[in-house]
Amino acid sequence: MKSNFQDDTPGLVHKGSTRLYKMLLVLVAFLTIQNSYAQEAKTLHLKDALNYAVKASQNARKARLDVENSQYQIDEVRSRALPQINGSGGLTYNPILQQSALPGDFFGRPGTTMLVAFGQKWNASAAVSLNQTIFDNSVFTGLKAARTTAEFYMLNAKLTEEQIIEQVATNYYQVLVQRQQLKVLDTTIKNTQKVQGVLQSLYDNGLAKKIDVDRIAVNVSNLRSRRQQLLNGLELLQNQLKFYIGLPIETPITIPDVELATVKPQAVPQGDSIDLASRTEIAVLETQSDLLQFQKKSVQNEYLPSLSLSSSYSYQGLSNSFPIFKGQNRGANWFDVASVGLNLRVPIFNGHATRARLRQADVKIRKLDEDIAQTRLALNLAYENAKTQINNSIITLQNQDENVKLAEQVYFNTQNNYNNGLASLTDLLNAETSLTEAQTNYSSALLNYKVSEIQLVKSQGSLKSLLN
Image (tube, rainbow, N blue to C red; front, top):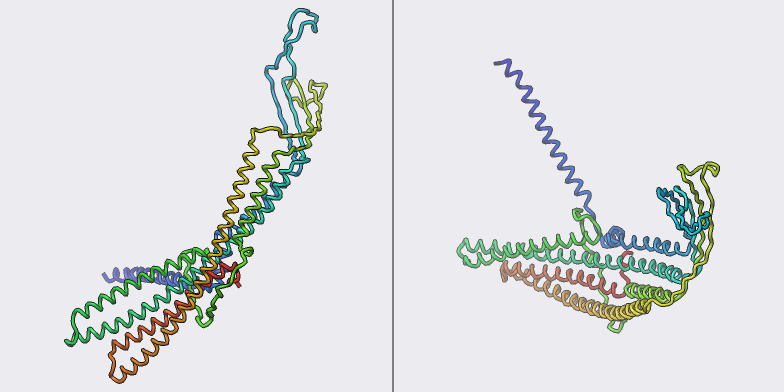
């Protein structure tokens, strides 16, 4: 028994050490993962978020790929003006040759018809051909259109970047506004819980009613539910921000508070106007109009003749036996053939199809003119609305500033009264809550001003200034 006990003990110790070692490994791995997540958290200032977005956003990348692809489109159109050279080769076996009927006079048998097979059973050929456009106005029109297409894609890439900047900047400040609302609610919950504690103490001493205790308990529960809703909304806004930026959704981010002292609200004179010629939206539509003009010109080119040069050279071999790559003395006959020609194509009548396409192109141009006019109205409307929103935000800021000063005065007076026994703790807590709400509402109004400012900057066509 003794010896058995001594033999088993080391095994138990070994198993226990192994289990402890595995637990330590799991703990170390868990801490390592936690630390890696903490290290990967990105602190996003607005400029950092904007600069990252214009590089990483999938929409921005696709727009840059369109710009790259436009150069290839130019190369494709340019190729139509260059020589087109093709090579070909073939080997044909004719087990049964085509026969032709000939008068028997050729063979000394007048009055009869003879069937004679022409050709050889094996035919081989190797050829090269060249075709060069001399005059085709559609080629030159297409080249101009391709260059304009490249310009269109560059403007579209610029417009895409501006849209990304607007989305990211607006969503960024919406996150901060939501966070300010959460701070107000946290303060309200804290002060309400203090009042709840006072009421519970009074109720325990027979100085308050049960209904008052229940009512404030319901109020606290509702505030906590509201807080959870704000937290969920904040998480959704942050996920949306990461989507706009182009960050993986699982990437943790930290958005620092804005130094509110750096926000300098400025009113916009009502008489100010904008130069629509500098707006990217108008430039994109005008470039699109140029493309439609080229499309119309391309249809008009169908009325014009075209001229091209063609040439070919081939080397052919004929033989009744295979392989046919033998000399003439072994039954194989080889010879070369060459040709050069001019090809003129003159359109005469196609059932008025060209005229119909021309009128369709003209309708597209007139429709786009209406779109441009509507876009100009929409941009002017956006600018006027942005000015009104900015000026209203400044009025709101002034009102909130007055509310803060008034709440501070009420709080200090209530605090003096409480110290002198002239006000209750509930009054003091309510005054403190009102002051906190007024201060936070002022901060939220400043952030809302920044959101309005983004719309103003957009309407002025200066969104890229936010990157600097």
